[in-house]
Length: 95
Image 1 (cartoon, rainbow, N blue to C red):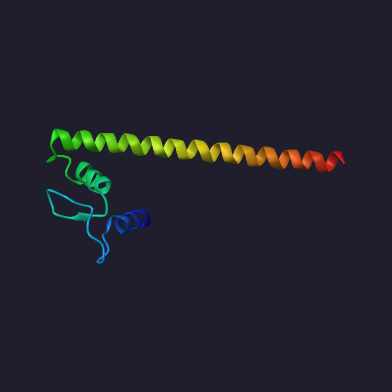
Image 2: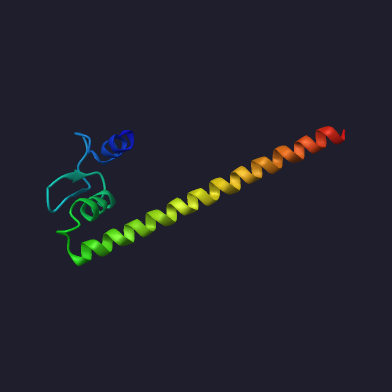
C-alpha cells in the first residue's frame, strides 16, 4: 500500500544522519524518539513495558490532538474562503 511505503520512508534514517533513537527490541534505527515510540507500541505491543505502553499512549493522544487541530483549522479556512467568495459575489452583483 502507498501509505505504508510513505511511512517507511519517513522512518528511515539517511546514511548521512545519525539515528535519533533505536528500537530496544529489534534494533531498528529511527529519525526521532517519537517514531521509535510508535514502533514499539505497534510492532512490539506484547513485549513492551508499562512505561513504554504509557509513552505510546501519550504520543498517540498528542497525535490525535494535533490531527484534530489540523482538521479544525482546515474546516475554518474552508468556511472563511467560502464566506469571502460569497461576499465578493454579493458585492459584484449588488453593483
